Length: 109
Image (cartoon, one colour):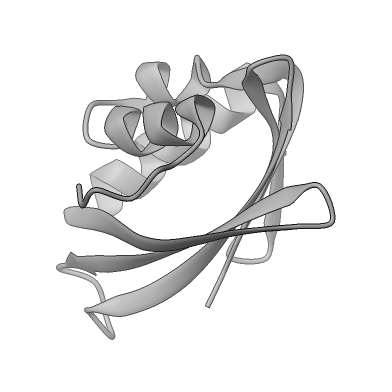
């Protein structure tokens, strides 16, 4: 990762994304919601399943390169490069944090 100063829960998410679905799920609160590719995933089990499925489908790396804070949310722009259609692509990850964990994540183009 670059020398980008990400809040610790967000940095932990991008580090866990290189590992597995279980590591990613641990970054979230028990009531967390992830919105990605038109689907909503609620709670740790659904978030783990989402990440496991995405990782099984495609191999990719995610390199965050910009972050801004707006309206209580952190917006991280990251370049994803891998074996998926349209690679590489820049995506926006919109995070809301609660008590040191991720409560909400929406990933958009």
